[in-house]
Image (cartoon, rainbow, N blue to C red; front, side, top):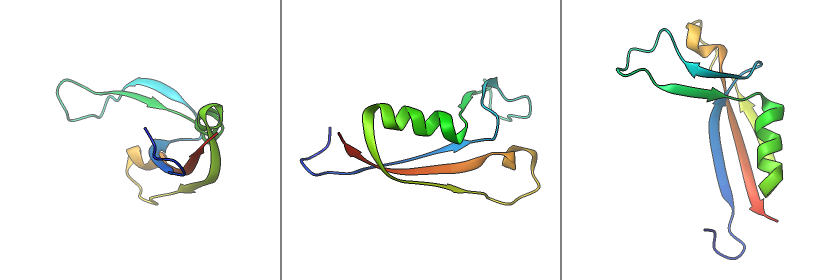
Length: 79
């Protein structure tokens, strides 16, 4: 629920290739389920429900295997 004129900020991890499932290297028990979306996939999902005012991607730049992901950020407004 957004107030009249309110904005919604969303942030999630994404990657160049989308995937779903558990992560073999996950230390957490039970292993967590991930839904990783490409930039086009997540932007399309946002556009289906909102006006996308801003969409940016940040690369954490680490050599760790899980850092093949990047962070997707969007500023959204109601339609």
